[in-house]
Length: 501
Image 1 (spheres, rainbow, N blue to C red):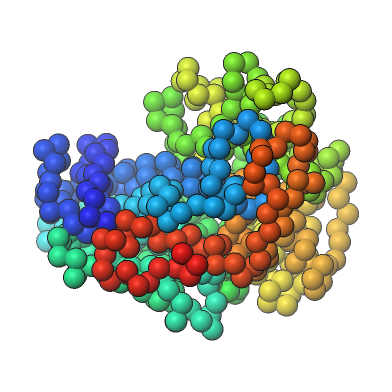
Image 2 (spheres, helix red, strand yellow):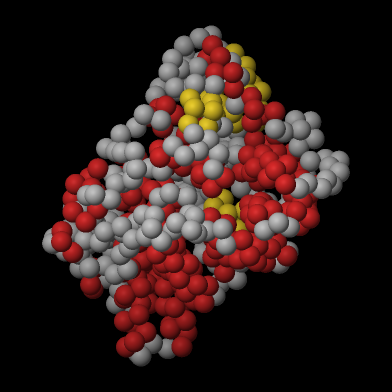
C-alpha cells in the first residue's frame, strides 16, 4: 500500500497509520509496538476511533458521491467545487480517491494496533475483571471500526455485491495486523469481494459480542445498537435480506428510537440536534467540530445571504407533499440567495444542515452534529429487504409507518411489484436526502443516471458544463478507481485496477 507515511496524534493517543511502509517513527510519537500498554491506552485508541468517524461521515467524500447521484444540480456560482464528480470527468490521480482510500486504511491500521495490544493485555492475565471488561469493550469498538472501514472501501472501490459473482469480483486488500514493512513484495493484493464482505461480517459478529454498551438516543459512542444498525446496512448490500430484516426490526421494535411526527420538533432535530431518532450522533462542541461539507455546499453564507453551490432538482422537490410532509419545510426553504454571476434572487435551497448555534465558533455557521444512523433508515432497510424477499405486505407496512409519522393525514396504502420498489426508492430520497450518498443506492438498484438541464430549478443559473449527463447502470465508473499512488507503490495490485480506468 501507499509508501507515504501518515500519522495522527490525537487525544494523547499514539499515531494513526495508513500505509504498510512506516518503519520511521516521528519524534512526536512513541513506537507503535509500545503504544498499547494499559487500559488507558486502549481507551485513548477508542477515543481516536470515535474522532476518526466524526471527521469522515457526511464529509467531503460523501459530497463527492452525492454530486454524482443526479439529486442535485450545480449553480453558476459553484466555483467548480466537486466539479470533476459533477461532470464525471475525474482521473485516477484525484485526491478524493487517494484520501478516501488512505483514511479508511488509517482507521483499519489503528483498529489493528488496538486489537493486538488489547489482546496482549488480556493474555497477560494481570487485569482485574472490570479492567478486562473495559479492554474487551474497546476491542469491540476496533472490530466495529474495521468493519465500517472495509465496508466504506467496498462501497466506493468495488462493484455492487452480487452473491453469484462475489467470489470472482475484486474486493480490497485485507490487512488484519499492523506490520509495517518497506518490502513491497509483502504487500497484499486485492481479495475477492466475497472475502472482503466475510471480513466485514466476521468483525461485526465480534463487535456484537464485545460491545456491551446499551444503546441510547443520540449516543455519542459505539453501542450495541450502533453495531446492529451497521449490520442491517451491510446485510442489505449483501442481499442477505433476512439478516437485514432481523437487525433493522430489532431496532424498530425495541421502541427506544421513535419516529417524530411533530413538524416543529422535527425541524429542531436538524437545527439544534435534538429529537428521538438518532442511534449514533457524534459529540461536538465549538472546539471539536465535525465536517460541514453538506451545510457549506447547500446553504453556506457569503456576506449575509447563502450562496449555494448545489441545489435540489425539481424532481426531488416534487417528490414531497409540500403542504403536509414535515420533512419539506425542515429540509428546504424558498428564500433569497447571494448570487455572484447574476443579481440576487429567490429559489429553493437545502437547509437540512443550517448550523447549530451552540457550535458556532465565529468562523463557520453551517455545522450540525452528524447523525450517522437514524431509526428511519431502519424502516427503509426493512421495507426494501421485505420487498426483495417477496413480502409486499410487510414492506408496505414499513413504508406506511414512516409516512404516517412524516405526512399529515397520510392514509395507508398497499403496494406490490415494481410499484412497491418505486415507492421505496422515492422514500429513500425524501427521508435521507444528502445523508447517505444516493450513489450507492443507485448502484444497488442497478439504476442509471439521466440528468438534464430541465431538472434545474433555474436553467439560467447553471454552470456551462456538466449538467446534461447520461450514465448507464452498467457504466464501470459507478465504481471509483483504485488511486494511482496505490497502484504505483503496490506491485500486487498493479494489474488489479477497476474496469474502465
